[in-house]
Length: 320
Ligand code: F6P
Image (tube, rainbow, N blue to C red):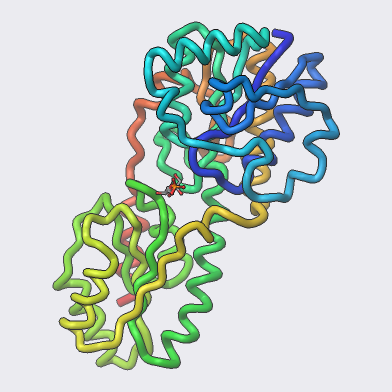
């Protein structure tokens, strides 16, 4: 394989740049030409494709966001769009593609794979919602950002003896809430995978306050069916305690990637190039039990992500 492309797609995540850098530099080392495709599948359809050099990916390792920009593409979801994408890759002589993105982006990679393109998928999303890998690139940084916020919010919540609901991202996955809840000492974590029990939640707040707890921190994943505003109102009404809402939103997607995210991005990026060089079939690359793994792309995306029930129960025990 002589020419490969790399793109980032979907929501950006800290560590995407580290992955791009690894793909570009390992690709050049392996005597390949590496092309950066701007704005994800949208840019692919529009032919926004430029050759990258070693120096073009200098000074990006530690930066959040993605130097290639990213987008969500409706055009690419159509059969016509996918055929056009394959033709565009052919026009530029690109034989293999590294796709860095979340579930939807890697599914786009599956569509291209079915049309004969070799695709290496890297799990680039803060959501940690891919079943085949223990962690996704950006998740660790996002949780670290949430923890920083939780620590600050605890100070003011204690001073005012308030309950604070902190809404975090994750789409349909509760992993950001779960990990930040355990590491941040939340009183409760609400995630889409486990049905919410309002009575139990409010009882816990009241009992805790009566025992002298100065504040209650509730971390709620955005995918929970009850709206955060509604939840805050219900808690306030039922417990009689002042309750505030903090929505962390896009804060969670920015910032310099942590050591863990840089390592995951760099090692999966290097693996993608190694596999393309070997002319391997399409793969989803990730990490399981601390080892870099590469599974058949289509099969990997069929793996359902299971929530860690023990972790959830432990939060309950520690916050009693
Ligand atoms: O998938 C990453 C993510 O940040 C989700 O957690 C969130 O639901 C979504 O993207 C937000 O998307 P957008 O950037 O389109 O608002």
